[in-house]
Image (cartoon, rainbow, N blue to C red; front, side, top):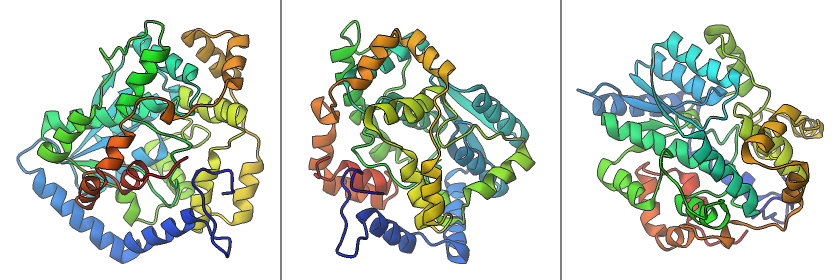
Length: 372
């Protein structure tokens, strides 16, 4: 991590604030026997809440390493799992196969929302025209909404989130921002109809979130915070036990997300998003600093077929795509968002994160008033 990372601060000894947050979280979320005891107590809680219902837990699945491992771990603990998937119509073939192979072998039911591809592609096109780095925002919001909708439909009180601060870190707001109002604002300015169309897309308006937080009280749990989760070991384990296949890189199981990481970010911002996850693994001792730097020295390769698919589906020729890459930079602050509301309600969100109704990372990033 260097001075190019948004919101980074180095102390007199050259230690950055991201390392300090990591150390605080290491203390707060122990692994080993202590972590196992905490997780098992939480699982007992989840089973009690699931009595008389069809499922104990909702797990969002993408075909990726983290969500696949959570499904396996949940079944080993005897939890009745409902997998939830937001199909944005950009899944890679490997990711799709991973989902269905895993769920079949583990005997897990699947709740899926498939968005209309024309409706969704218009969102992606609008975000590419927005000038911001948040071009995959609709995917993250769509998955979050899908998980809440699944939980509400089946009366499930708990969701498992596959994030691990030890292997993924946390992307700063200058790298990614997302909320439903933001999507609406971008659509109204940049979609071809100048309208925000949400007919098949699962929305996550603040009013919906308030209902799920306060009345339905669906809790988010990040089980990987309490386990010794080493990604390379897990990938081998999943391949051996579930026939799971690696798709070539972090977040590359989705073709549009792969375009973002390997083409759009590097060419438009000179940014290598791998620095976030690699730095986390260095802080966790899973990589040496030298190994982390060596990974970042490996060039990113954008798949030409994926780039061509982006152009064809979203309606950009070669020249237009190059113009998008070179266009003036904007951020979420150039559009209407919920950010000011989140900042105003910071004390309220502090209480929500204490009760696991929102994640700590959401509280820290979205309610702070720090500028990017």
